[in-house]
Length: 304
Image (cartoon, rainbow, N blue to C red; front, side, top):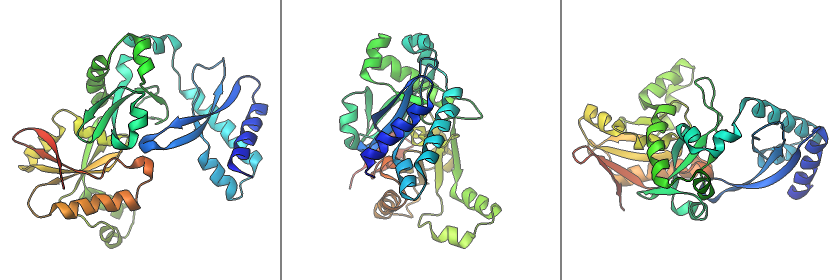
């Protein structure tokens, strides 16, 4: 069965299980030029539909999972998430009602040129600050896909501009997703607690001893924490030195105090190795090295 035939059969099978609503397969622009096929269900009884990406299910089919099993799983996933994710249509149409849910995240500008033609963004170094609306958020659960990217048409609908969206996102994002900073040593200690082999764990990390991970409490889109007010400043003051910032993924960055113990080539190799061997294309943020100067309170890009 070809991938297209698979999509047609999944769509038909899920449609037969629905007593109402229309099943559709749409293409969704993701990070770094990745485009995925998503199944959505337009159901008049629910005000929002989760997007269920098909590529993972096709992989399961190729591994021997039967079509009826996959259709049942997709149907269950739809009901699981459509029941917990709610968005009032009136809220969506009114910016004043939705402005408290606006947040930002970071994307690589060069790798997302086509997408950036359709959405408002703010340039930051070689990156782009883009905005999204958090549909479902609580301390207990946060579904990454329970959000939608702010597009140009949304600004027209809301009768607002990028300045308002940027201002609100600057305030909301640290409130919705507080920063979390921990050392690699703490991670290794946790590994010991989970009975992992410490030597094996340390051997897999070719990195300076003073290495800190900056993300948010949800561990999703946490690289944006490098933009939070005073996060870098407070940490640099504590360390009494400037900082190297390594973009290890869209979900986190690594902070290394500048003790003159490691060179740029070593740091670039670290970033390259992580991007090329540990991350999917969609998770890569950048291959660049950034530098925070405590005296100027500014982040710059370290050119080769």
